[in-house]
Amino acid sequence: MKDTKDIRTALRAQHIETPSWAFGNSGTRFKVFPRQGVPRDPYEKLADAAQVHRYTGVAPTVALHIPWDKVADYADLARHAREHGVGIGAINSNVFQDDDYMLGSVTNPDPKVRRKALDHLLECVDIMDATGSDTLKLWFSDGTNYPGQDDIRARQDRLAEALAAVYDRLGDDQRFLLEYKLFEPAFYVTDVPDWGTAYAHCLKLGPKAQVVVDTGHHAPGTNIEFIVAFLLREGKLGGFDFNSRFYADDDLMVGAADPFQLFRIMFEVVGGGGLGPHVAFMLDQCHNIEPKIPGQIRSVMNVQEATAKALLVDREALGAAQAEGDVLGANAVLMDAYDTDVRPLLAEVRGEMGLDPNPMAAYRRSGYFEKIAAERVGGTQAGWGA
Image (cartoon, rainbow, N blue to C red; front, side, top):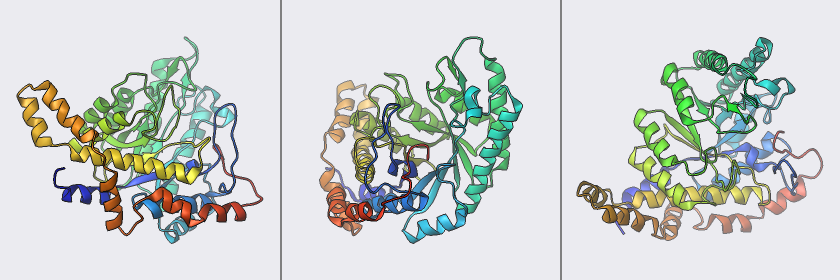
């Protein structure tokens, strides 16, 4: 194994953001299975997220979703987060659940609905100010189900107008990340269906607008690592929503379906200089049948393992093989790193950080689940959409 000093440094500095909604009850269109100890408000969500950071050491921020995490005093919520050893990360807007948004939000043909949606987006920037967040994440379910339902170009004009208004409201140290999704809930035309559409809008706006890559939002067979490499090269990769998919937007634990794909993505991230703070590594998952906190811990560990393997790639040997046109030799360099068992290395890194080498086992021994299961009786459990 190559010298690991720099690799250890990079792994200790890694920052993976957990989503508040991952700690609530979630499921499919058919069933949500409630579990014991699920948070009843955003304060309890942050307490659970703090457990992930406590045992992994690399999850110091928590993304909020508005209005799911709406509170009367956001400064107080940020204070509560700090008391638990974490901070507020990205603020996620929600313009897809109100009845008014049946035909779209910022691209809706009705100007009153567009105004309502924009007001919410601007409210989210206010929440950024109150919590100290520097990132706003935008995803729009807007689109049409039938040919002729609305004017495709006009909808892009409306989208551009709304994005420009949000961009102008951002502070000097704030940015927004524009997410894309191939389909669902719009089935004929989705207004932001791919990275190219998101990139085009962000490019026109300026440096405070970047693209976020949700790993579950692509057609089967899409080469996500190419998208990552391209956006990094252009300085437009703002972050990831990490999850895993077998069929569509499954929101499974990252790396569960295709750990080799996750490695290939991280290989491009490392090679493109994307391990710094300018690229946000965020989890976006809904745990349906698995327990919430362990599901997040396992996801963080999966990203760590893919990152460690990507850092182990012998770039000098790889470059030499590529320059010589040695197809098999270059592939072998990559596969040597992927085939390396990095769990002992990560266990050592955790030891150097004063952590238990096995975060999953440490959490199980902590008794935290038994504590919240006993204490969180009554009230309304948080869930996807609440």
